[in-house]
Length: 71
Image (cartoon, rainbow, N blue to C red; front, side):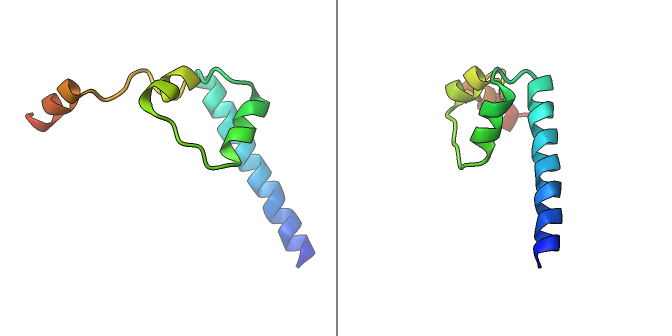
C-alpha cells in the first residue's frame, strides 16, 4: 500500500545518504549530489576511473596479481 511504499522510500533514502557520507569520508572526490546521481544509475569504472573518482588507491596489475597467486 502507499504507506508501506513511503516507509520503504524513507529507508532507502537513509541508506543512500549513509553510503554517500561513507564515500565522502573515505576520500571520494565528488560532491554528495554527484555521488547520489551516480549511485542511482548503473555506472562502471575502469581502474583509472575508480582511482580518479576516489574509490581506489591503485589498480590490480599483472605483477601484483602474480604475487598474490604465488603465495
